[in-house]
Length: 168
Image (cartoon, rainbow, N blue to C red; front, side, top):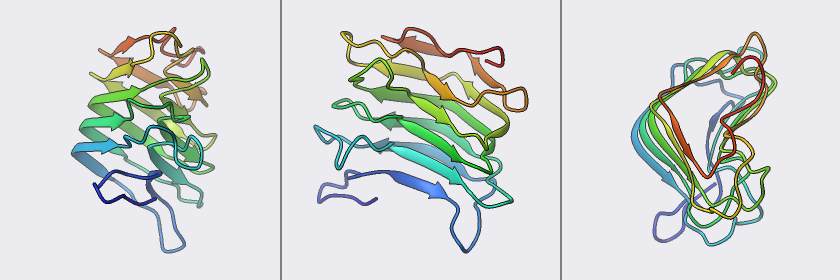
C-alpha cells in the first residue's frame, strides 16, 4: 500500500490485523478511497481490504458516506472482507462502489470464510462503468446461515445480479 505524488493509492488501502492487535468498532466516514491508475499496479489488487486472521477477528466495521472505486480498471474484488476470523457485523451505509469490470467474474465485494454475524449494505450504489462487460454479481464469497448478506435500498448498474444464495 502507499500513495503516489498526487495522493492516489497505488495498491490497497488496508485495515486489519497485525501482530499487535485487531481493530474493533472501526468507523470510517465521509471518505473517498480511489485508485485512478489506468491499470492495476502489480495486478488487480482490491482498493479496500479488511482482513481478520487472528482468533478474536475484527468486529463492528462501519463505513458511512463513502466512495470506493476505480473508474479505469477492475480490481478483483473492489472491497475484500477477508480472513479466517472476521470481519463480523460489517456495515456499509450511503456508499458508492465504482469499477470498470474487465471480466464477468469481477466482484464489487468479496467475503471471506471467517466473515460472521451479518453484512449490511444500506442505501449503496454499485456502478460498473463498463457496459460491455456485466459483473455476474455484486457480492462473491461466503454467505452462510451464520453470515447473511442484506442489501437494503441499493442500486446496481451494469451488473447481472446482486448476489446468489439463500442467505442474501
